Structures are given as C-alpha cells and as structure tokens.
Image (tube, rainbow, N blue to C red):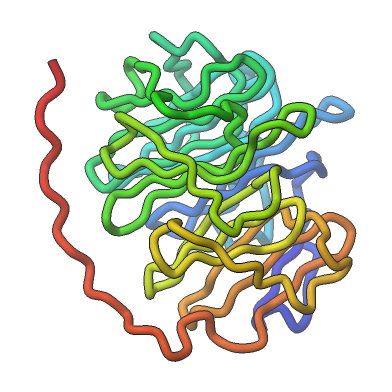
Length: 292
C-alpha cells in the first residue's frame, strides 16, 4: 500500500502490519477508518483495517473470512460489507470489523467482484463466473434477489451509483464477446447497454465527478460520458502505455482524476474534469415503491 499527501506528486509505502500484498479493494468509513481487501497469497489476505490513515494495519478476518476479498463497501450506519472470491459470498460487520457474519441467503452465485450501496441502504452485488450478473438486497444483506434483467454481460467488475440513483455496471467480456457498460435507471429492475463510443470490451471500474460526468476505466484506457452514459469519449491522451489497461479510477474534491494502470503506474488529469461544466445540485430521490 502506498499513500500520497501531495496529490500524487510523491508516494510513501505504508505496509506496517500489512502482510497481504495483493490488494484489490479499499473502503473508508465516516470515521476515516480504512478497510483493505486482499487476495490470499502465501497465507495472508482477507480484510485489514487502519485507524491511523494507513500508518499501521491489523488483520480483521477473525478466521471467518478465508477467501480473496475483491470488494468492500460501507453504509451510512457504519456497517461494512466484504465481497469474496472464490465462493465465499458476502460478509457483513456491524462493529467496525470486530466480527463478521456471512449474509448469503438467496445469493446463488457467491463469486463477488463488486459492491455498491445506494442512498437508502440497498445493496447491489456484482458476481463473476456464474452467468448470474447482479444481486440486490433491500434488507441490509439479510436476503438477496437476482436483478439482472437486460444484462447481456454477467461478469461485473465495477458498480457505482450516481446522485440520481442511476446504477452503472462495468462488465468484462468472455472470450472477446460482450462486456462494456450497462446502466439501470430503475434501481436495478432492468439494465440497458450503454456502449455508444465505448470501444473497449473489458470495463474495470466506474466513478463520477461533481458535475455528474461518468468515467469508466477499461482495458483500452479511460472513457468519459457527459450525458449519463448515452455516449462516451475516449479521454486517454497521455496515459502510458497508449490504450493500456486502467484498473482503478478516483476523482478528488477538486475534480482531478486519478488513473491506476497495469504496469504504467498512477496518472493524474492535467486539469479539473469539471472545468467549464455546471455543477448540479443533488436532487431528492423519490422513495421506491414497496416490492411485492
């Protein structure tokens, strides 16, 4: 694990207590505690926690989590959800990682690649390798239902939800078929492919700036949509290697974008991604109708 305190100009290795070195996920709760998910390699992996901004880490698997942790998410109550691969499903902690409970009722595919939680606390879990796609929980993970209507690609590498409640799924291809971006505007009840101008087939992650623009990381660079995913523009100029694989994206409070690449390191956008854009005020989201 590395940390930068100067917008990426320099980096410091912060591995004190961190025995797992193949990290796949990060989440930060309202108290600033950092949770890290890692693959198990050489006996070390699972979930680690830092309460001092990464200066030190402790493993918090408690012999419950024993498979690779590929996704982490926290809700407004401070509950932590860990998505595991291969076959462990989803685990929940209600005590800051002090203990874990498996929450897999209805989760037929337990190979979890991604997690997202909306403003009302509903959880979405993206799976891989089963052909199932996305599961949805309305009761804090106690039960799950399949929510993949319209998904033609079912290996879900990334999930994010914007301020309007629209869910974006970054998907991977299978043998070069499928993949790309999908969007749901009805809380996961249905999905539509959103690949106009999106020339990559393997999408890895998705995020938003404060103007509501959507950014997707892919094997092929970074793509941007200014119209809720209806069309995309390649914004990879300057990334090395050209057309390389971008695994992770983040946008800071100044709307500068950061791209983590496979082999090329970390890149930062030259200017704010919101330059010249109107920053919308968040709109209140209507309460979803009760499900039968």
